Length: 96
Image (cartoon, rainbow, N blue to C red; front, side, top):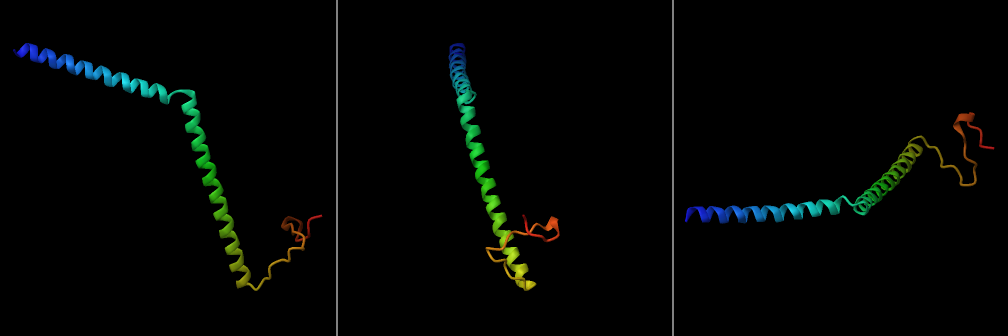
């Protein structure tokens, strides 16, 4: 009675293990397909580009805010929109 029990238990455990291993292997093969890898990479790149865009926008907002603070502190008026941009490397001369 003991041997048939342990034999049946071993066969059942072996069959269950084989099924689980084959399912795991199938899932890993699906994940390793080039289309799946490309999809994951594209999703990661989209997330990264969105993060970079948000960071740049936040940096621009912070720079504008800091510029307003400094102009207010030192009583420097904002340049008129029609004024040409000034190149500081040319000694404050307008760009040609």
